[in-house]
Length: 488
Picture 1 (tube, one colour):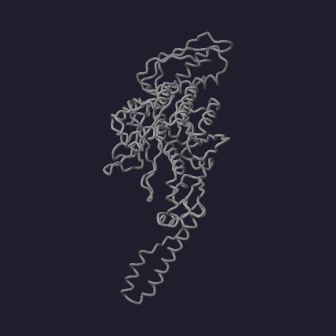
Picture 2 (cartoon, helix red, strand yellow):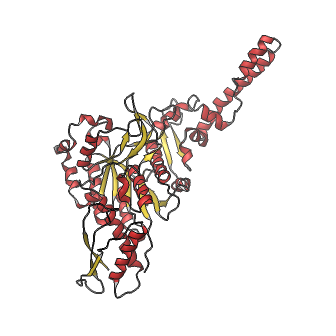
Picture 3 (tube, one colour):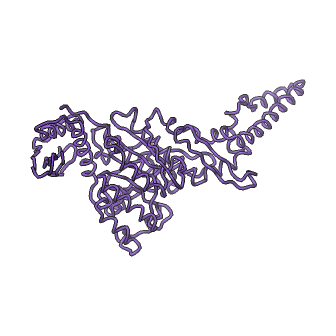
């Protein structure tokens, strides 16, 4: 039986659209660079934004999004009848004023001096009075402007835009065009619905179960958050499935990661009794399958009325870099090879008035190593560079997660070949062929020592095979021989 390479499947869970409190049924939607607008239209996010009565008599506006451009200020104004009416009123008054200027200048053309003055004045007249042009040009000084500022400072709006911009960053920077090599899918989620969504993933057919789950939900050290984190580790352990969450600055009792210098030594800080439950989670088997990231990065420059660019959570960096690695080498483990796998052409943020970067905070090498030692993988930026990367990594348990990324792919391939297998007297040959094909089709020489031995201890018509080999150095350097059992 010939081996057919499976796509690397990334499932991203995030606040793409509001989630009902009860009876939520997640909808898993495939998306690539060409279909992101279709995904937005399918999930149909509708946001209810409360507003002060002095700027909006109704006290709120409802916003509907059908494409990525709908998150732009001018599109928000255009697509909402109330905001559009405010903007049109402002545009009409400006156009009327411009016409009056033109008429007045015509009356004064009798004088040569006045004629010259009118020529100067005419150069100031706006010739394009189309609705779109005026909305974009005057978004910061129209009657709709205070409402736009309120919308973009609304936390629910920020989370929704951030999720979609993070997804756009993944499919664009990693070049996700189609679903053959890398298949990206998404689902809306909230903290309250995460357990429901994880249960739904666990019930998927085997060929639909992802290789990696990105969870765009921030975690802190509060009891509800820690309890939810424990459920995530139970999920990763049961599924043997790598997942990624992100740690909020609140976890360290700081406002943002620029203040991490207030913590003398991170590992000692986490020895505090208040982190006891978190440290217990780090010892669970599922912690070895979990990446906890920190340090958001900027993907959209600030609008004229904003102080800061739009940051997206660090899980989008992990997803993007793993996808880049799969494109480059066929395997996700190269996400820390920052010479070839890095995210560029990002937005920039002012760090200290003297330098800029694309991350919320700039970490010293010592801080990076302290975070990794604590089981937290930071997204790293560079001073005055629009780039982010991940130079060092660690699972929440404290060891490298690369073996888990590798082993997940191996098990997936064996399950697939078992499912497609025609009755054979020697399934060990099929297993060996599948493993050899997996390495060859990803561009690597297969191990010479692939050993598949019939254990002969299974009941009924099942068989158990003991499998061992040394992974190629080009894929998983320094791992040594791996040994495991597989039921056929």
